[in-house]
Amino acid sequence: MSAIVTLKKGEGRTLKAGGLWIYDNEIASVTGSFSNGDIVTVHDFDGYPLGKGFLNQKSKIAVRMLTRRADQKIDPPFIRMRVQNAWDYRKKTVDTNSCRLIFGEADFLPGIIVDKFSDILVVESLALGIERFKELIVQILRELLEADGIPIRGVYERSDAKVRELEGLERCKGFLGDAFDTQVPIEENGVKYMVDVENGQKTGFFLDQKYNRLAIQKLCNQASVLDCFTHTGSFALNAAYAGATRVLGVDASETAVTQARRNATLNGMQDRVQFLCRDIFELLPELDKKNETYDVVILDPPAFTKSRNSVKNAVRGYREINLRGMKLIKDGGYLATCSCSHFMTAELFQQTLQQAARNAHKRLRQVEYRTQSPDHPILWAAEQSFYLKFYIFQVCEEY
Image (cartoon, rainbow, N blue to C red; front, side):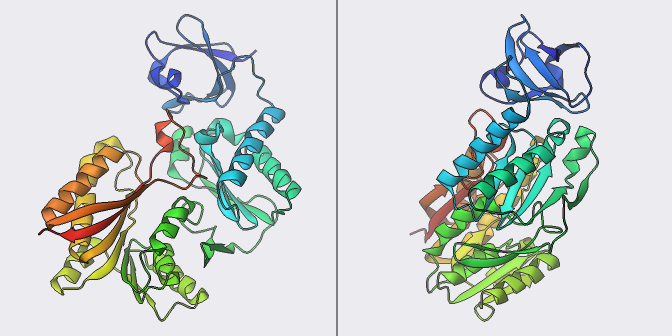
């Protein structure tokens, strides 16, 4: 018998609304024998069963739910069912050449991410309970893909995020199985990249912007384009692929810029795409003073806030870069701008963009509002699964 976690009276509102997390301050008691990471049954304050999840008393997120069925056995067939469902969903919704195969809570496998880059899998385990199922999940994925004619050449683990320490886990990275060249070639939207799965940010490449990168292509034919926070050049290269005449990609990381230049050469775009290692907050005012203008400006910054406590500072950052970016856009040109911070809500981001437009004396005409790629599904009520907000605007002078 699994241990029983009983909630305090009046707690568990997020869980009952469809979420998957129970915080430590919502728990009245834990009865029975258990170790951190074990599967437990969750009861409401009155003993009503709410499902099963894994418990970790070292974490603020004390229970991560796996099922709403208290009588469900959590065993390899159950895990296979979850992984099969995740793979079936990807086959219906996205180009699976490179995509996210498992997106944690949104695939009802909390705390684990698995990305596929061509024939390589990259796994990131972020919670103690799911750590025990990690190798099983990878094995099942390999079997399912092999059955569909997609052999996997190797698996690399990128469980080196600092958040693991909050779970009482050590940060780690390395091969799961045989070694292979960690520079992995992929193609997305017609653009080729070398993905560094060993040392790149997170799992090596940001797959969540796949269809947002595709969306900007139609704006960029015969255009001059400025791509800010270019990372390894993905938006800049999509602009060039679509026929942009001049593209400048900028990032503060020399490592990222070096990789971006390699990607440009890989696509034969080195003559039309230049990359610069600079701080965007310093560069944009300089470009404005020089009266530089562009047909398209792209702003894809890192998350300016990773907690509620720093949201005010983040708002100032987003407002500043968007104001500066808008000033560089020719009348009738286009702005693609986004926030990848869960704590920067859609409403707050919209307000911030409105303020930036007013301060820049510009009018915004919305072309599109988009979110993350469908392989990063948004599970309603699990609000942490919705994080990427992406707008395309036409930017007009105030007349």
